[in-house]
Length: 424
Image (cartoon, rainbow, N blue to C red; front, side, top):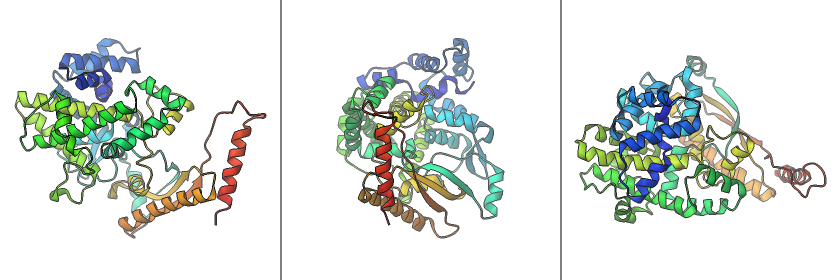
């Protein structure tokens, strides 16, 4: 029951719209909207069950929703073993579903605050593994897990793409503008009702980047402007082109952007919990606004529970939200390998979609190789994992011009097969 409503924290598009307009949002509005969002997922659950999910834990303000709500939500799924955070083995399937609503990094931050666990080791991925002693025994024998089906493109997680979206917002705008010319992406855009168009996406990312600088500057006791997000965006407009996390300093010079975001979340949750009521309410609203923008992006990256069938899945593959982040491969291999000691990765069978021309296939395979060698060089030589590449030919619907079943697709696959065959 804990997941009901609480998991909708990132899905509240109505409150995001009110924040954009500069409207004051009361917690009674947020609470009602969480319940209504949950009803969309499963309209067969009685309302009293949904209200009970919030009322049982006495969540009566946005501050307690962000602190106690996220603590309870994360506690249901996460556990600590030998000072590291894992997903509870018996909850792993439900955890996977939860991530369609809520990216994992904020849950890790809330749980680590609650349990006072060091998270400095989380540098490459927020997709935590389940705790499985059986895999530990395999690792002790210098063996490991052989993953025989990973699509190299389409595997980058939301919390990593989020950093690129804030650094390269204009690239995301241009890519999405291009993608919106296809019918699939138009359907997805109207179905999720997050962005009016690519310019609206850019505006939201600009607000998120300004909010992040604003939230970090609060640590230095700068003035609180919120909830007027337009003033925040204007005040921090000079930072829009910076490709550096505002939390970076000499103290964290070796930390990844993912880890800096996690540390920022922890710091913000601590401030909201400990500040006086007038300040922490403004801080909570600004942080909530930031998380709602992140949540809107997540819906275009992760397959949602209400999306069924291959055509729904294909919308995620063509909306271009991953294209900038997946131009290079080094970070992806670190993500797939995990956060150092929690990895059981021995061999990866990476799948890629071949191109029509030999020269394009050569460029693509060289990019993958460069990323792999960069990953191996930084990782070190102890028990290096292995990479095998497999061509993955993409499914496509039949063409209306076909004179026999899948005529065009068969021709395209033959061209791609010969382009691969010609490589030396």
